[in-house]
Amino acid sequence: MISSQTKNRRSSTVGFFHQTGRIWAGVASISVVINILMLTGPLFMLQVYDRVLSSGSVPTLVVIGVLAFSLYCFYGLLDMLRSRILLRTGQYVDARISETIFKISTSVPILIGPKAANLHPVRDLDVMRQFLSGPGPSALCDTPWMPFYLVIIYLFHPLLGLVATIGALIICLLIGLNEWTSKEPTKEAQLQTSTRQAMVDAARTNSEAVKAMGMVNALQGRWRQQNNDYQEKLRRAADTATFFSVLTKTIRFILQSTMLGVGAWLTIQ
Image (cartoon, rainbow, N blue to C red):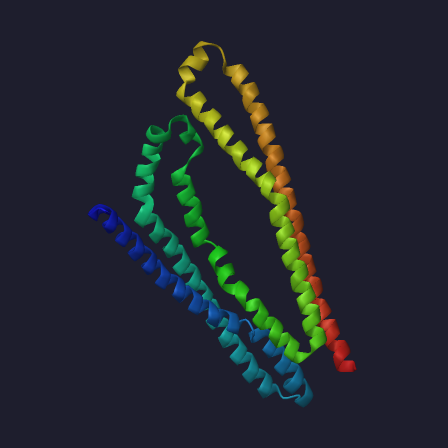
């Protein structure tokens, strides 16, 4: 038989996720409008080439420009609103469970002993809050719109759709390779960070004994080695992430120019 305390705790947890669920529904709704407004640029260029250049009408250009400017402003306001909502959502989650996490953090050493040194519940909560407040949730809401944009491009011409699909697949492959190749160096850098911090904390806690026993120089040597290892692992992780980031950005620019070139070729044909 489930105790009343367990039932209350489960009811509180369910209510908590129901409240955040409504927030995510609102974020998803805003993302729908944001992704539709992202079509403003391509549609504006299409109207300029199709109507303004062929007719030479300045008033048409002014009207289309004012409309595009208004849509861009609306897009900016919605994007800012979504970012502010995500920031406050991360803070809301932190406020609701931070006390429980702190209680767990102080109880873990008693429950599992020395193994608790590798567990950092408060730090994990900080990482979760940073993710909820960062661009991660926005990217999750925007990614499902990729097929929608590809369908629109296919409606213009199958060849344009094929080029866009190949480009999207290449970019997704690079993102996957980035995650796969940088995972181990990043993990090693994080482990080295914990080791460095533990060494600093131990030296500060036992500073009087360290100085009395003349171990300062020896600890400095160990610190130098630890810091050099940390810098090397951090450099490996950063170099890998930077390589794939720059390569992805370069291919994205090449893809944009390729789409324009293919569109011009189709127009000539």
